[in-house]
Structures are given as structure tokens and as C-alpha cells.
Length: 88
Image (cartoon, rainbow, N blue to C red; front, side, top):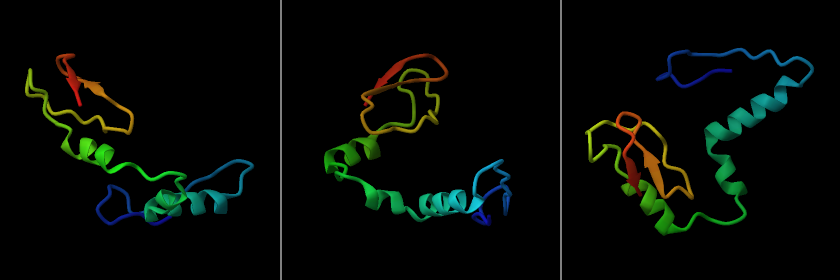
């Protein structure tokens, strides 16, 4: 499978014992294309999208940069450096 030119590896090869690799290729391609967004039963509310966009990536206590992704339903996350709970 060919990947983005910005990645560390230009291609990856999967060996899936007993499974059809074409099914996996289809699923990975669907993720890369963003097609799963079209399969949602309900749209993500705009206020939830805004909350995710505005989430701080810097801990207000120690200044550490958080790399944890903000996912729908989260109301807080813990700083990986100092343990401070950052409210979203």
C-alpha cells in the first residue's frame, strides 16, 4: 500500500494470515479518503467541533505540550508531565 509522501515510510506491506488483504486495503483506503465521515448516523454537533478546535495543547500549570487527541465526549485530559487535569 502506498502512503503519503510526508510519512516516514513510502509504502507498507501487510501479511494477514487467513484474511483477504483486499478487504484491509479497502478499509485503510476508506479511512485515508475520509469516507467514514459519510457513514455516520448523526452529524457531530457544531458546538462539539468548536470545543475540540479550542482545546488547549499546552498545560496551564507546567507549560508541557500535550499530544493526546481530543475526542468527542471528553470533558478533560491529564497532562502527561505534571498530572494536572485540563478541563475542556
